[in-house]
Length: 113
Image 1: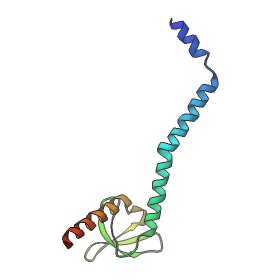
Image 2: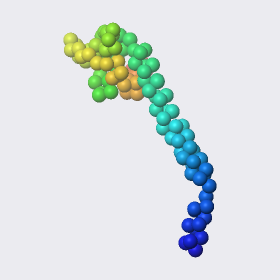
Image 3: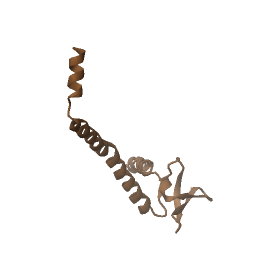
Image 4: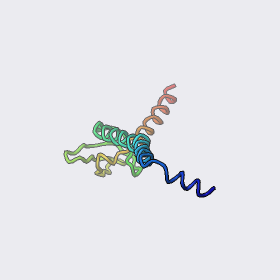
């Protein structure tokens, strides 16, 4: 019985394993690589669209307001009155900033009622 199974396994076409490997690469592309590239593109677009006066959160969790946008790809963020730090534009977290904006908009709508 075991020999019969081994013979069947050995008789499989070499194209089967090639097709299987190509299928695995295609699955990895559509479930891992493509969504990650899309997310990176959205993050880059978000980082380029931020302006002075906006409240942001950096990827390390620092909350602040953009005070100045520098020509070298950095931004000056005011984290408290009179306290400024300089961070890269790419350090601004799109997910955390959007979540913060939704939360504050919801709070402002409740306060307005």
